[in-house]
Length: 355
Image (cartoon, rainbow, N blue to C red; front, top):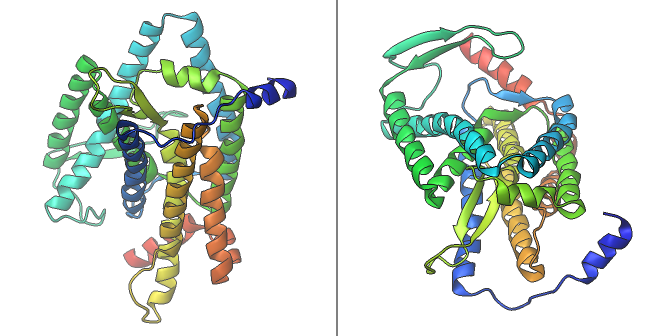
């Protein structure tokens, strides 16, 4: 899209300042709430002392490029191949992943309800144990221990998969979407604040280009019939549904940044703990989560007013990054926030506990 075309498109935008009807208001609130909940849960789950997948600076730089290749590849698949076939393949692929993601969330929940803290220093009473071998460039060697909560969680997750594949029910879609988001946020960690900023700034421009510059993002979102987005009926009281939607990327990617800030809050707390200071304060986490909520509200508001799809990261990135920088400036902790390597410090802390 050239500059003249962009200006013309802007001129053709129509503003709607009327309040949404009750059904649409419920949909907006539901999407907004469903986005915040997995960030909160996933962030706290990310505090557990297990080895997470860590994103490096090179990963952050290349992520928008890899994401663009994947997105455009999907666009070409939907354009030149049978949509039903493409969706069927993708549905089964994501359902397999989703089943294991839901299993992870449910087994953690079951252990919590049973009074277990899920600490890796207290090994599970395994019913089944085996080792996954190392496959070069594909898979790291890993010991797998399966206990009763894992088995129950897997059976429930498999039942949800069957429900979704047979009905394509939007509630089942959202359950998978929420568990995807929780697992993604809890398992993917950022080692440094700068890595998170690089990632979000890159995705800021990625989102703007693919939403405003082309029809690719909107086309893929509407064509992709798999649990990679949250859905809610625009009028839940109607006989047939049209849906409001939010992509999981707009939850998970800001979510891992917000989870980093909760880990930074813990780092500050551990520094003060030796001085006898009180319980952990989550200033960075809480303020940035509120900023995310305000950014998402702004996205929904602009989308409603202009009746046009919006790149959510256009609003979420400035809110989240700006909030964390503002807090660091007010608290005089800018350098500490920028230069702390939380993965290295967590590893050092863990090794001290085991010695």
